[in-house]
Image (cartoon, rainbow, N blue to C red):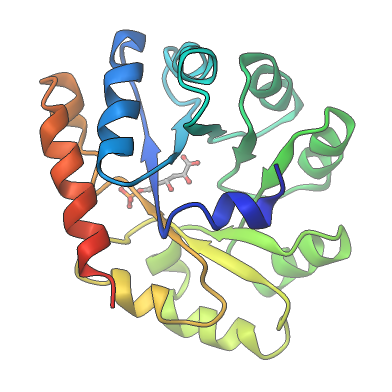
Length: 207
Ligand SMILES: O=C(O)C(=O)C[C@H](O)[C@H](O)COP(=O)(O)O
């Protein structure tokens, strides 16, 4: 799957930290019921990889990938678990080369002009902006649109219902990532209906 297609699946991309792999499928179903058919499951928790493996096997209609992918080892583990893509909070030549070598689509994170240039010079035109609001939010994205007119972003970090439209209304933003519609307490309390409702609320709020 190409980055362009992944970032085009849903205007909101859930960034998930899962503590127990038994929550993987109910969570995937709740997101799908809310109209969100993409998931970034971070490698921040030990259950993350197993959750990716379960969803990719049991629910092929869900586009599941990994997040917090930081090095070649994470790339190899993502591929092995069946991730369709790998998101990273950052970018490095090592990571780009590893993704190419192991044939997995990488959507790296950028926060500066130099990092955007590193992406572009490697033929990557779809990136996360991370941490979006701290890196400059809407203003940095507007500034990037001049020199980097081919770049498309998925701002993540600090995005919530209140500022979602400000980001999505920008021409160089395809989707926005975040945790606001997949709150950790809803996962641990098995309140999956709440997650479906939050997805619907977010999607309905889009201009
Ligand atoms: O771990 C990664 O790969 C990340 O990119 C970090 C996430 O994007 C942020 O944790 C989102 O955080 P919120 O501000 O709560 O939406």
